Each structure stands twice: as structure tokens, then as C-alpha cells.
Length: 389
Picture 1: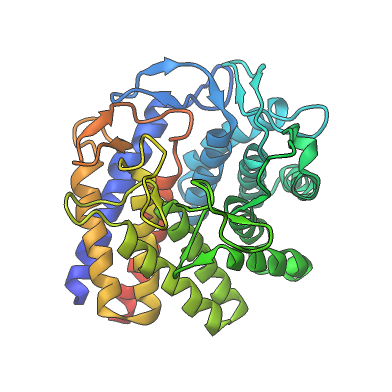
Picture 2: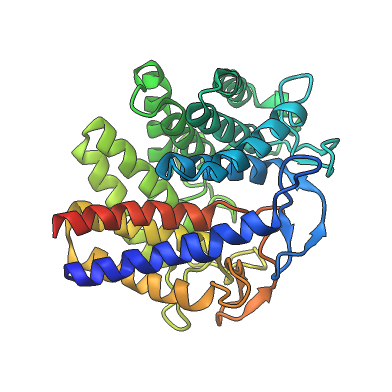
């Protein structure tokens, strides 16, 4: 690749982010009457359900706060982030310090999950908004919630999830990887006070290492659990964890961790890519038994977003030709299949052959996050590569 190719890619990513994806959310998601954002948006941006999901509220606050951090003259980004941050602060938290999973249009509670992720994305969004706005209330609230999250991790019975005599004792990859990302976002380069937690998360993630990849669930003894859950590989999740680990390898100046992370990304992609129809499988069984998830062979937007950035980040460090080729391979499939050239933003769900199965752009788990995050992070890497060439 040469400088011209890199500049062309950078322009394409910028046009996609600022000309298609972000305008879609600005034009259709903002609730200027009640606050917060609508996230159930059809392909043309029309609202088909007014329920508001806190995962996506927190993520969208984070996204627009990040956009403002990068584009300080675009005050509208900060204003949009404030609409979501205020709505979360006023409505999302329970009296016990938990965070609801979904709210009504006006902010009344609808449901709560027996998981920590609503709390994580609540803290993620408020922390970034507090930093760029200079309003310490949001930073304090994010750090308070961070404390609550650690407590829930250490005492999972507080989540209200029953444990029976026959319940397998499995550790989930999702928890240590999201906590590493949350620490990175909240602490940034001042992470010394989290050294114990960082070390614990890294050790827990390593337990999930199997045949060069990261499996979703591992026995508490660090051994493979002989069950469908124990053999589950989510390629997108493993690759996303891989680039989280690369960020920490760079922060900690840890070459071994960098090599470990790089192997995870490459090996998982090799296993997860569909050589017949293209794209990345949603779920696989690590021992090639039949996955039990009915949607196992679908192609979702977010694993491709994570792989897009992971390989570009990897190439920027290694300058290996195979990392660049994999980046281009993912980019060509992703940009060919997911973007909606007519209405803007991306479709999220394809069948194995790459045909659209769900026409909406926003749902309970798809919002203003994976697509714009991958594009923004990739633009920054392409800018760096442009300067190097």
C-alpha cells in the first residue's frame, strides 16, 4: 500500500462516518422533548418503538462526546451528548445503585437485567461526557458506578441471578474484557490506581485462551468445560477483546501481551471467516461440533466493525502484509454488505449468504456505537499511517 491508497481509504471512512452514519443518528434519534435518544429506528429512521435502552443511551453519549473531543469546533456534538447524559443521570439509576436496562420515552423504568452491562455503559458515557464538558458531576457519578460494578462482580448474587446445585461454574470472557475497556476509558493514562484490577482482568482473560483464541466461557479451574457453553467461540467478541488487549499492551509497554493479543486476532479471524460466502460467523463451536445458537451462521455488523479496526491497528504496529490484507478483506466485505446508500447508516443483520434479514438500523442492541466507533478509530490510524508515508 502507498500513501495515495491510505489517503483514499481515510477519505472513504470519513465520508461514511460524517456523511452517512452520524447524520442518521442526529436526524432521527434525538428526543428534544423528553430527553435521551430513540434507538428503535427503521431503515429510513422512523421510530417503531419508543422504548429507550440504557446500553445504547450510554454508548451514544460516549460516541458524541468522543466526536466532540476530536472535533472541538462542532458544538452540536457536545449538545447532543448532554441530552443523553442528563436523561441517564435523571432516570437510569435505581435506588440500590443499579441501572435499568430499558426505560419509557419519558424515563420511567421498564426492565432491568441480571448483568452488569447497563451499569458499564452508563459509566462509560457519563465519564466521557464529564471530561469533555468539564462537569465533574458526571465524572463522580461514573466513578461511583464503577465501584458498584466491582461489587456486583465480586458478589454476583446481588444481580439476583439464582445459582442451583447443577449450575456449571463458568467464568465469562465478557466481564474482564469490558472492565479493561471501561478502565481505559475512565482512567485514560492515569491508571496506576487500577493496577490491581487491570492485573486481575488480564489474568482472567488468559484463562479463556484455547487453541490460539479466546472462548466465551471457561471453567473456574481454567479448564475447558465439555458443554455447548464451554466450547462456544464468538469470533467478533474474541477479536474485540484482542484489540482491547493491544491497547493495554501499548500502555503497559508489554511486548509479550502484544504478541498474545496479535495471535488471538489472527487465529480467531482464520477460524471465524466463512470461506464459502465471506464474512465472519456469529458463533462457532471450538471443537467443530454443531453450535446450538439458531443464528450461529449469521453475519452481524459489529464483529466486522471490530475486525476492521483490529487489523488496521495491528498493521499500524507490525507493518505485516498479511495484517493489511486481512484489513482489506474485511473492509471490502463490510462496505459492500452493510451500508445503506439510500437512507444512511448500516444494516446490522445478514444471513450466511450476506442477504439482509432485519431492515432496522437501531434495535435493543444495535445503536450509535460499533459502526461510528470503528470508523472513528480507523480514521485516526489512517491519519497516522498517512503521516508515516
